Amino acid sequence: MKYLSGYGTAVAGDWEKDWDKLQFRRLEVEKNGPEGEVVDELIIKDGEDASVLLGLFVPISGKVMEAMPNLKIIGVSRAGLENVNVEEATRRGILVFNVQGRNAHAVSDFTVGLIIAAARNIAKAHHAIMTGVWRKQFPNSEFIPELTSRTMGLIGFGHIGSLVAKKLSGFEPEILVYDPYADENEIKKHGCTAVSLEDLLKNSDFVSLHARLSENNKKMIGKRELEMMKPTAYLINTSRAGLVDQNALALVLEEKKIMGAALDVFETEPIPAGSPFLKLDNVTLTTHIAGTTADALTNSPFLLMEDIKNFLSGAGGKFIVNKEVLDKPSFKDWLVSVRGS
Image (cartoon, rainbow, N blue to C red; front, side, top):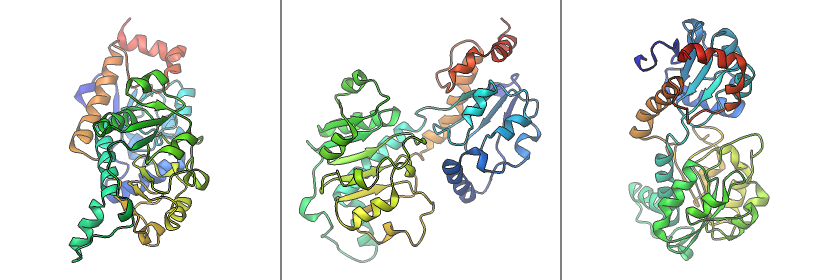
C-alpha cells in the first residue's frame, strides 16, 4: 500500500480467504446488498482511524462506515457496486470509487466467443467428442447461422457493450442498441442504431445483455420479452443473472420458442444439480468466467489506486461514483487538509 501511503489507507482483505466460499458470499452480496452480510471485525479492527478503505468483493455496509468515523473514500477494484452501500456513503459524505470498465475487454472478448460457440455448437461438439460421440446433429442444425449480416441486439452500451459492438463490427452485422442512459450520438458513432427494447427483441438474431443490475431492471427480460424474440434467435448473458427471469428462460428454451441461449451467470452458483438448464440441449453454459483474465485481475487494483491518488493530488478522478459528495462542506474541508490548499 505504499502507493497511497500518507493518506491513512486500510485494505479490506480478510473477508473470506477460501475462493469457493468467497464466490458464494459474493453472489449473496450481489443479490442482497452489503447490509445482508456479517463482516468480520478483522476488516475494520486496524482501520478505525483510516480515511481511505480499499476492497474488492467485501461488503461495505453502514456498520463498517459507522465503525470508521474518519472514513472519506471507499474504493472497490471492480465495476459492480453491489457490495457497497453507496446511498449511506453519500449521506455520510464518503466518496466512492470503482474501476469502471476494468474487465471490459475480458468480458467483451468472451461475449463474442460465446456468441460463436452457441451458434456454431463449438462447446457441444467438444463435449461430444470427449464423451466418445462423433456428433453432427444439434438443435439448430436446420438453421446454423453465419454471423455476417446478422442483426445483433445489445442491451446496455457502456464500456462492455460498446466494445462488443466494436469487436462484432468485423462480421458486418446490423447492431441495434437499447440503453435509455446512453447518448444516441455516441451509439451512432459506433455504427449502431438506438431502438426501443421491444424493437430490439423482435428484430435481433442475437440479444446480448450488458446492463448493470439495479432495482429498476431486475428480471427486465421475462416471459413476455423472451416471447418477442425470433424463434431463430439466441439470448446471451455475460452480465448479471438477475436481469433475466431464469424460470421463464428455461421454459422458453424447453418449448423451443427461441433457438438457444448462452449463459455465464446464474442466480445460484455453482449451478444446482436440479437446474432445468442442465436438462436442455439448446444452451451453452460457462462458470462465470467472462471477466477472469490475468490482465483484468492484475490491473484493477493499480487503476483504482492511481485514480484515487490523482484525485487526492488535484488531478481529477474519473472513477468517482457519487460526485455530489464533492459539494459537502465536511468533505471539502478534509480535502483541503489533504491537498494543503
